[in-house]
Image (tube, rainbow, N blue to C red):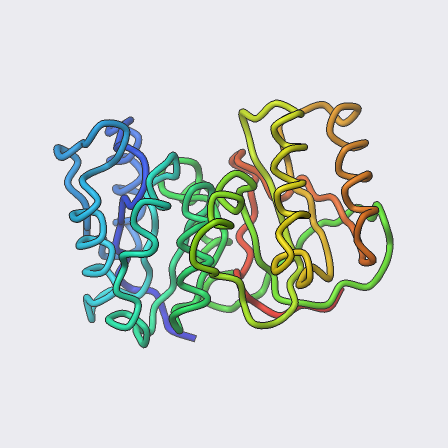
Length: 269
């Protein structure tokens, strides 16, 4: 596996805030790696980190930089859906690098996994905890060794490509170009700041999408920031609509306990 020596930081989604936290985390990274910034913290555009054109330019440039081994998103928020169909995937298709993101970056994980050979990981990002458990996260990325603690809700075999991420981000992709893998999937989902009825609505948007529904051969529900007595009946009900294993894991979350997992890897559980 490619040894990580240089890390590029990108901001393809929400506006750049908490500059002090960002700079402190960069100082931590710089103790072990060379760090290159592919964003402009002074170019905020409404609730976005920059204009669509500039976010695309920085994102592509980070992967095209021969010195860079790993590309790490600063944060999620919103904005990836505006650029995902405009990125030149042919330009970066064969870049031998790792990409790390989650939340809104779930959209980019899906696209890069489908259209490039870039190795993707669903993980904490610079602003929400990647550096807090740096050794373990880097080890998972470099060596592809990971572990998810799963609680069975419907204990059946799951066999497919690990795909999904943030529920609202996944649903936002359903009306556009398909970034689904060709193979069957184990769908993992998490979210925050969404009331129960909206989670219900979004889950049924997935169920009503025939292409996605037909590929689901396993379900892993992460953290939704709700009490178990609220969320568990809904996910058990939704899981029962599928003839596959259904599992629950607090390891997949927006919290700083979120674990790093390879995106697009084929699993049998």
